Length: 335
Ligand code: XMP
Image (cartoon, rainbow, N blue to C red):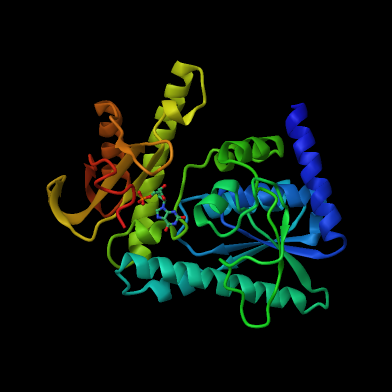
């Protein structure tokens, strides 16, 4: 694709011109935006880029492995996997308030990230730049900056990043004049796999806000396993919808789908045994912008398959319920 290639070449040239011989650090979240920035910077400056993946243990099943695979095998960058799972579990222990969970996950991310940045600088080659996956709608929504519709790749200040005392990075935000669908197209052109490029929206605080009440390792395991089944079945359902319409377009598909683990148990029976175990809530919505959403009218056989598989395959779960509430009055997430 000529247009895409020339957009990539322009971005690569702009990044090279700005960065020169300096070092760049970037926080990988597993999402589309940070992955595309990483892929662009990889092409522009290779090992001058250090990608920091802070693994908070709250991503979905398989995602940390996917991120590591892509950025160690496919792109020639410096990749650091920070295993922060235990620290997050400790910090979240006993915390039930959704906003408190969000605050903890967000604050700890920057702590972990800046600790790595400080470590990197020990070898005498300080890190001058921080690359970020800010996209155009982020700027409009936050109202943080006004670019007058004109692209500016480099900024020296960002009021959303809590830089520690005495710490400063210049920012590189190569996606700040692109919309989401353009970012996805860039990702594909850069060779990122579909499971990253077409990843459904996923909240920054991750599974911490899909476990109602306090978070622990056992609940996380149950939720990851149930959610993996939901995604497998609804990915396949979406593929069938795409095949019918001949178009890979979210308007023709279920937009966001996942499992939620509530803080209750209920009675069931398995074989000759009474069980007292957890229910899993299935959430699947149609939407175009997450501002409003309609619960997805999934076929009964799809629902039956998901329910049957979760109860059979996930230990600790004996019931599956489907959330049939739209937004408003509900929200997409439960917390
Ligand atoms: P709600 O639940 O408000 O969600 O209907 C709307 C969209 O935003 C996502 N979401 C979040 N994303 N941090 C994020 O990065 C958050 O704290 C957060 N909360 C909700 C949600 O998945 C949906 O796509």
